[in-house]
Image (cartoon, rainbow, N blue to C red; front, side, top):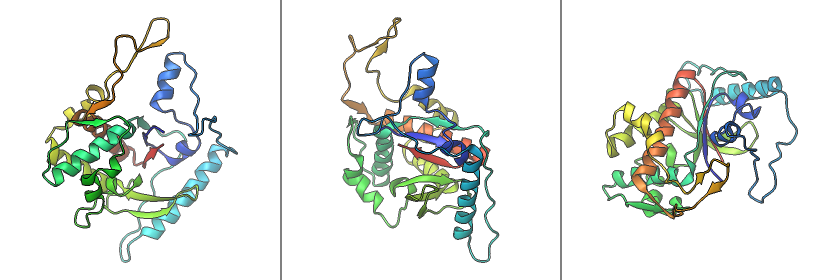
Amino acid sequence: MGLDIYAGTLTRYYSHNWKTVVQQWAEKNGYTFNRITPDGEPADDGEELSPSEVQTAVENWRDQILAAIAQPGQEPYTPWPEDNERPYYTDKPDWDAFGAMLLVAACHTYDEPVPSTVEKGWNFWEHPLVVRLASDEERVWSLFRGVTWWLPLADAFFFQAPLPTDNQAMIATLGGLRKELEKLNQLAWQADEDAILDWADTEGYPIDGTIGPDGQYSKADIPEHTRYDTQSLAKFAFSMFWRAMRFAEEQQVPILLDY
């Protein structure tokens, strides 16, 4: 399954009132897009709640979570706004680029050389340096601890809790994510923000095929890539996380990994 990043309200997310970049591209180019489960069956969203019911449910969840993580003697956390209209940001780093970003972070953390390429479909969680940083008690990164949600809070911490769907997940904060992204940029690239924002458009996966004027996909004269440039993929994913982080800060909304 692919990996998308989403920054927006939980109401829009659970009301399915958002489209991945692949869905947006398909609609723009006159294609039909269907979500398929790993076993090849069409995705079934099950019984649908109305947007107002979804909003009530996620607001209740939000308030319970914020109450549970409130620190004794401190002001309670301010609830972020929930509605079905607030804008959202989404893009698609996919797993190979996400893994390349983690690999670059791990290599620079331990002063090891960054491999020039990574294999398509590689299991980055098994790379020795990624494993090392994921278990390093002195260097704790939410990105390496299986976190899939970042809530719009300035403090940096993460915890395990049930999602609105009751599935257990690792949840962190936007403040923590910003610190991690700033640390990674400092370690690896020392790039300014304009360069970082550009990488989502200038770096990434090589083209494996083209869409012809007849709308047909063709791989003619374009070799299928089985290895990718590590730095290019890492910058590509990093840019999307940076864009999502900046958007979430401006809108005061969570970031989710959708897969």
